[in-house]
Image 1 (tube, rainbow, N blue to C red):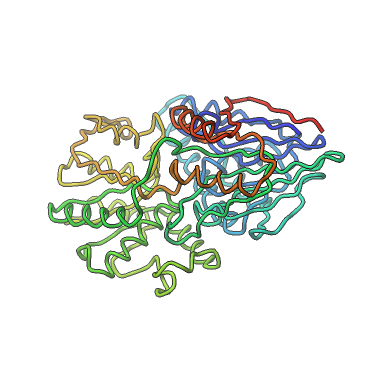
Image 2 (image 1 turned 60 degrees about the vertical axis):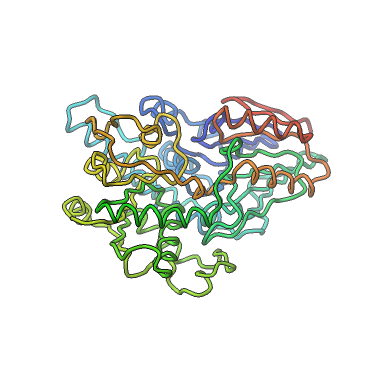
Length: 462
């Protein structure tokens, strides 16, 4: 067995790890790189392996940094199966179509500006091909991927449908169990269930996004959200929230619904301005079977993501009209790192207003506009124009859908307790400072741990 770390190695985007068993190669995820545009474009154009040598893809969840290059595989001729949970399959269908649409529009925009022609990485037709290749499998049901490799999805508790992946690999008389954590969620998140750490592992590929940080309590985040909405409304401003269309948007809407039920926020309009978020909310409503039934609102309220204050905006003219509206409001719009999407229009129109609040509710990777907002640069560049950053900037780290360092340590601890023969732990999906800190934590706890660089290959004899 050989593992090659082709993405999310010493960084947090481009998740892709190649597992070769009995001459067959399986990709765990095939995600999009994000960050500096030219650098990300160059990385994204290079597939991790020639298409003709790839036998299957096993997808942990639908976020673009894990699924976003699947249409490029299809464009280059991949016709194998993409295995996922049913909810991930349905979320990926809308997310990849949206990603393709954005790429086509960006290419058209550059062409109209008479800039160097940059063709889209893939098209909506390629995204549709991926949907045809995807097969949905329930949690905790084993399935054959390639000869000698049997997989099982267990709930990762990160977003709807997210999974950790168990790969049981047989080579001759040798059996090894590889566990790929995917993105590990937090216990107590609204809507989704808590993570379920698998056992019996011989080796683990583990995310480490927050390996050096602690989150605030989820209850504190809801309380702080209410405080920010009230204070901004009193100033007559608007709360602008860059949010991932899958997961984070629904969590924020869920908490705003809870706050409204408790009369903890004023009755101001809340706009979810993202066609993708509209579609993904519909997918959430299609999969109540994976909701956490221990949550009060899940048990007590039929429509947890719909209430009188919230308005879902699909039409582009309605979106533009929001910038002409007066009075306080909340606008939630993609993308989560403010790199594309309708949030850019709202930042262009609202970042200079000191009455407004830009509320950051997710991790912001290096070299993204979201990171520059977190750093509170005096000006930010939006659509190529310098915009003064005078709006208040608030951050709520408690909304992260990733486990923090304590949650990660607890997860791997439970894996080890249920894995008598546990060997090496390979840290992925983390920036170097987070990975190095968490590697030190694991080493002191007796783990054999490393953080592979891009292209690292490790082999295990039969």
